[in-house]
Amino acid sequence: MATRNDDGRSAVDRANLLLSLTVSTFLSRLHFPIPSPLSYPVSTFLSRLHFLPRLHFGPPDAMIDSLLAGNRAFLADEFAAHEAYYQKIAARQSPKVLWIGCSDSRVSEDLITGSRPGTIFVHRNVANIVAFNDVNIAATLEYGIVHVKIRDIVVCGHTRCGGIAAIDGGVRENYIADWLCIASGAKKIVDEIAAKKKLTTEQRLELLAEENVRLQIRHLENLALIKNMRAKKSLPRIHGWLYRVETGKIDILIDGREAPGKKG
Image 1: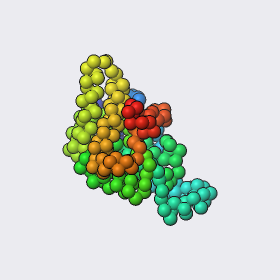
Image 2: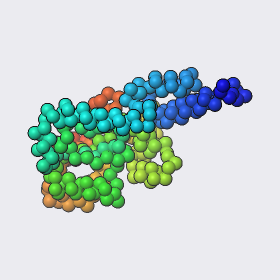
Image 3: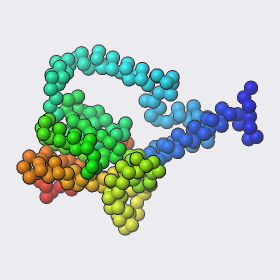
Image 4: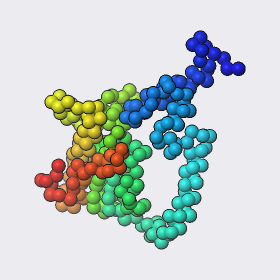
């Protein structure tokens, strides 16, 4: 028989409540519409989240087993049906686009653009940031521009971004705080706009995501490599996009196909 405390809850009940409260708090910071955890045991609460079928709350190896099963399905279906194509890109990759995006698991550049493997050269990090002192992104840019000969660079942010919410609301973790401070210029712009115009929380965060894309493009354009390419008139076109996770649509913020003077 389960031991009960003075409030009548068993240890299991209290553990369930604590877990549901923790999950609720975490998801609310990411702006997910969720039910109150106080009304349900944790299993019922989690089962009502709309994305639960994509998550695995089973044995520790369930997710890894699922990934490996997915690979077997890929081999049997997609790879087998287009083996000639995959052998071609195995010999040499020739993507024409460099994608600078967020690490968020909901924003898969191949999937949301309908692209096949071998199409997009990718760099992803928290909040799609271009940092002046980041050797990682510098190496990606240099390899993509000099060796792969990419023609376009896309900086893509997205709505309901946890990194953007942390830029606006602050964060305690040291590494995350140090990283996100690179985007503080976008918050300053949004603060100035918000002082003149009343914004809902969602509107404010969406505007911050947009301004962050524009800021990171300015950072990108100020990198020595990009300046040198511009001087040689061999700079790839630069695009700024915002992906809406709630609708699946990409908004064009800066259209690299237009003349520089016409970019938004």
